[in-house]
Amino acid sequence: MKYLKYILLFFVCLSFSSCLTSGLEDLPSYEDADVKAFTFEYRWMIKEGESEKLRVQKMDTDVKIDVDNMTVTCTITVPAANGAFTREVRDKVALSNLNAYCTISTAATITPVGDTPVLGKIGDFSKSDMQYEVVAADGKTKKIWKLIIGGFNK
Image 1 (cartoon, rainbow, N blue to C red):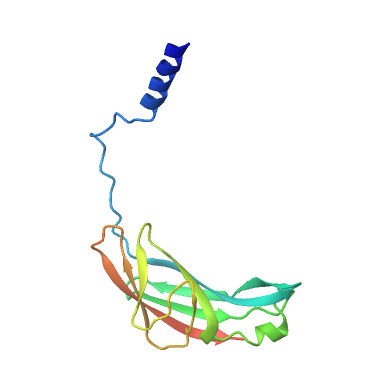
Image 2: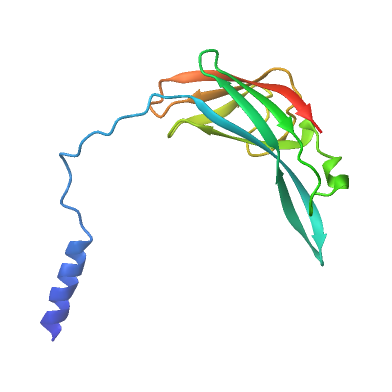
């Protein structure tokens, strides 16, 4: 019985090790540094009992991406009031208090240039010169994309 435990322990330890140390194929590094989509949302808190709850309303966004000139032009429309997104909350929506997200090329990274708002945080998108640097997965390909707010409709 004692030997059986040691034999089982040996096989368990052996199963956690890997024999593959070489001969792996190199996977390609993506060279794309493109913006694929852009979305905006408005966030606010509502009182629910003794606590507060975060609410999110996605903005209707018409996005035009010009790959040749590396520009993203967005026309943002605030949706009609409905449910928790009341007229009072809707009236507070402005370019200066929106949250933005974008989809970029596979495994690429994106960072704001200068005082451009950070994506994923509430920022001021009323600025005229907003730029984002997208770095491809290969770490070599870099593109500066300009974000243009072509319209804001309430």
